[in-house]
Amino acid sequence: MRRFTLKKLFLIAAVSGVSLASEENRKGILQQIQVYGDTHIANVPTFKGSVRDSSYTTQPVNLNEVTVNYAMFRFLRDENKWRAGLGIHGGYYVRVNYANEATSNALLERAHLGFKLFENIWLDAGLFESHIGNEGAIHFDLPTLTRSLIGDLSPYYQNQIRLGYESAKLTAKLVFMNGWQKIVGYGPAGGWMFSYMPFSSLSLNSNSYFGVGSNTESVRYFHNFWLGYDLTKDLNFKLTLDIGAEQDQYRANQKALGFGGFSFISQYIFNSQWAVSLRLEGYDDRRNIFVRRNLRLLATPYYESEAAFQVLGTSVGVDFKPVPELMVRAEVRYLRSFDPFFTTSLSNSQSNLEKLKLQKDEMILSLSLAGYLWGVPES
Image 1 (cartoon, rainbow, N blue to C red):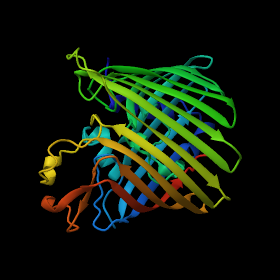
Image 2 (image 1 turned 180 degrees about the vertical axis):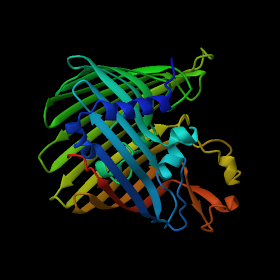
Image 3 (image 1 turned 30 degrees about the vertical axis):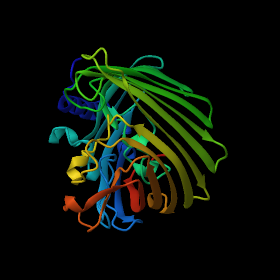
Image 4 (image 1 turned 30 degrees about the horizontal axis):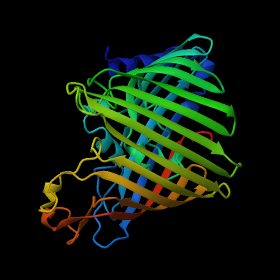
């Protein structure tokens, strides 16, 4: 598959945004800029001696510490015949989630350009948010403070070519990309993205991936389905299901290794300032395709191999918006593993591996402050 030169694409889109815009349109450019940031104020352990574990999440894990989680500057241009998106970002989320990317590539939040080929038919290419799932990097736009397990264990970004149909009710596209989550290199992959809204309060979505897996010698099959439903103007639900399998293509006798998860999120909006959320979730990665922990590092003789990641959880959150652009959030999240998986420290020192042990439970109270400094999206 041909690789995109992101710097060239970024430059083309930027030049297009200036040269193709009329003088009248330039007056509205500021309306197409978004500037966002969020900070995790604290992660407070509810179990004595608990140490946050980063093997299954891209979110801040340091306890009792202020962390700049995400900062983003984005420019979006949407015309009748063409559209483009440019963005840069930084913060803890970028350091963790883009750890395998070159520094210059990791700075790009998005860089894509698209053209309308025919009525309702679009061709887009570049770096996008992943077409899989419904939980992105900006938690201001999500019903919960933390992202679900299925959100953290599926791609957040992908380098893609998208070709398909778009209308008010239906979106159906073929997607070609260079891997599960990779900007340059890796390997070929494909899939589809499908979204249908039979009426304004219901959204049905199906997204798939077929291509290279954990390495270029494996093949991954994956499907994501999610349903969004507004029961009333104040009460909404989201149900998401992920299922997948991975197989080493050079070991024909080896069975495909399965994985999958779910989340159910309900949000009730009291008024323009207050809202609450409830989440139920689970993930099964017993074959350690995504989540791996070498238990020998814990210096615990009883554990001599990797622990299976089979987890159920729930969370409750409260949101407060003093103004539309700013949100203060608090969330209590509880996760329960079938086997001891989460780390805890007897000495409250993460550097002392001999004092670390495993437990089945993790419960964390998280606080955050998030806001759009410019360009709040329409709800």
